[in-house]
Length: 616
View 1 (tube, helix red, strand yellow):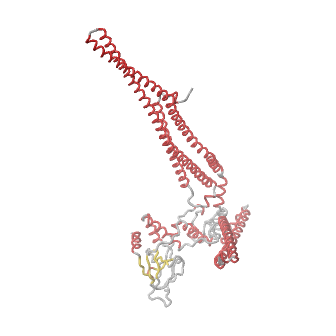
View 2: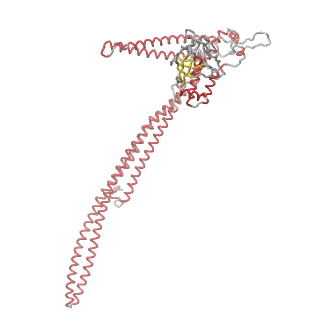
View 3: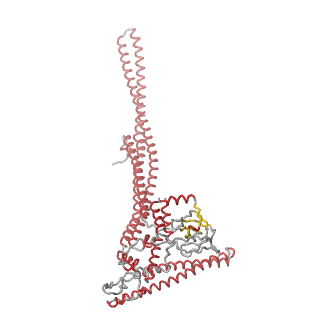
């Protein structure tokens, strides 16, 4: 069956016009579809990326890489980011196809408009030729009828034979001849118009219409082929993503398969294992006999104080509020101002450490609960700063930790120090090579400029090596303690060995709270709480709220106090909270409490209003 529009659809001009118009509408509709799908893919990519970023760990912590389930989740988030980038690439490809299809649709509209204008002009020409043929045909018909009537009149007059009628007959004959001549001319004109119309019609339906319709058919085929090409391009873009998507899905499956519950539970043991032995049996205490009450060494009762001797709680199950424990220390009043300063400018008065008392800390906590979001952070800093002056930092040898945790902490510290030493050595070698280069080629630089940096690197290496040696010594001590503890625990296999273990001296047994003797127990617990509380707040310095001038000299003999000379100008960091002490700062490194009666305070207007609003 023939598929040529010019021959098969020669009389369907209007139908072709409607069909091609519908094809243009489909292109516009498909272009809009691609645009909306590209927007959906872009939005999906953005939401997936935001979701992955939302659940990414906020900071690099050791716990995030310690357990397999956490590592698997991080791997899943990374695979989602890769998949989001793939969808973004697909969105870009769809947008490009949409833009190209839009430009093609605009060109196709112009081409279609030209083809149908040519078709209309050809149709108008054949219609004009048909009208001319009809006009000549009607004229020929009219002239023939008039010639026939004139001939009939002339014949009738000739049959009468009168002289008068003869003269009329001559005129009628002449009129009939004229009419016949006009009819003959009309016949020739009609024949000419008919011949011309037949030629125009043949050319229209055999030449012009097939050519125009063939062009329209080719245009329609190109449009359909362009739709097919665009669909194929979009499908190819998605198929290119299939290998990457398959790899991402494979990565998700591998991440799920990498989770090892047994390994994670073992890691929990490695992280939180203290290295202590479980407590032994509690010895029977016979109150019926008039003898001093004795407590077995495996008990967790402290027999150094009467109040603590009655405590029966086991240490693994005690959870105290470390903030309230740290805030409960008493505070002595500051020394009164001297009547006259000593010749040396130092007031001889008993000193007291500026630790936080219950009342000012309670006031700070009240400020924290009643203040707005703007002042809450400064209230927290104030609490932390006040406590940090009393609380000492964690010891460098990590003796506040349980043996097993101490060993791991020291090992991790040794690894970091070794890496730092390696970096410093590499930097030293690079500086030495640079100095040799400058010595060989003085125009490239001065060798003396490298010496200060070499000296800094040398001092840093010495410091790191000293730290490495100290940590190695502490690690060896910890390991020796752990080995001796394990040997002792292995030897306790009978009841007699347990009794002997209970009779050891209190000074030689390990305390269950992480220290090694009972004499160090309270101090190390206090240090541990201090270290934990110090991690809850940031370390930014408090802003200055004014200045002060010292009226008397003061010597800080305990931790937290600041020595000052008479007539010295200092910055006020925190006002007196009712305990007689004011917190001042000389520099970023020198900060502490001084007696309020020893200074004259000048508060800034803005800071004074801020403090008053806090106190209210």
